[in-house]
Length: 448
Image (cartoon, rainbow, N blue to C red; front, side, top):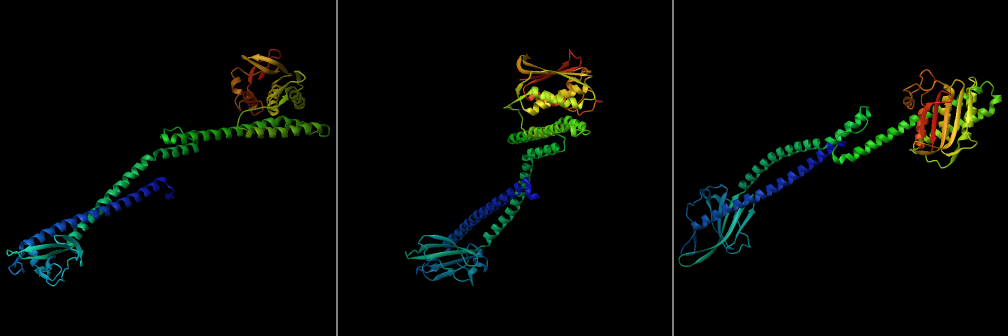
């Protein structure tokens, strides 16, 4: 909906603010202009009062006399809009202009003081100026009179109406121009947000991997957090995929043993039970590893010698038709700080590969307190076979997931890569080379 658009909301809000502002400006300008026009009208009426005052005479009897013709011709035209009145102060009227014939008398304010003038509005939308003045004749007789001049409000209303029309047109045009300018400014100001949205769409469609655009400084933190979130989720997804592959790979050997026990189940009940327990442990281990956020903090020991013996017993059943001789040169007990599942993954994958590639012989040996690569390692595990070894140039490739030394050999190509990952997480090192004794492949696992 348009109401959800940030640009639309800002534009509507600014439009309402501009409308309120222009309305207030129009009211203030109209009021100020009206007062200015009324002041101009007051000045005009003051001039007319002076004109009447100059024409007024006081005879010897003290009576007011006015000439038949005045300087302002509108006083002589009925309904001209300009009317003059003279009355004795706080008494009866003594004169009115010919233009005021038929109009009701205009009464001066009761609080009008001597020598004072008052500008007021009266009935029928007219303005009046009252002036209290004393006239003297040559004999020294004086009288107090109130000179009143009134004029229709058409002068003021026409001027104000013209101003209102001009204001409406001008303010409307200015308002539209300002709205267009604000719209352009909003489009320009919100361009970084649209750029982020566009890049996010590209990431969603797979055309980009991260938010790598040039964004406003206020949005750099948001872009960084989004990139961190995207990288974190991708790492989680990759870890889940890898652990599913590891799970499938780890279950191959127990399944192969169970498959070999199908023909004579009665005589292999213990083996079947062991392999079912082992499969259960593998599933729990891989689920735990998938939920982990990184790091292996082992707080208990596992005897690697016992693990090797158990794996040898399983592989003897899996490869019994091949007649492999698995030689062991290991101590009776060799505890190390490590997760049991990790040890099974490392030893099981390497021994299974050795059995798979060998001709007739596999050798597993352990050396304690070995120093290599300027470091002291607690255990050096070596697994050798008399197979063809790894072809030149293939060693680095097989450390990657899904790559096998020989594509004709059945497998998923993840065994050695799993071992390399686990050994690296444990702070150890995996090395491959040629076996001097057997002539095939030799894997060396250095564990801290």
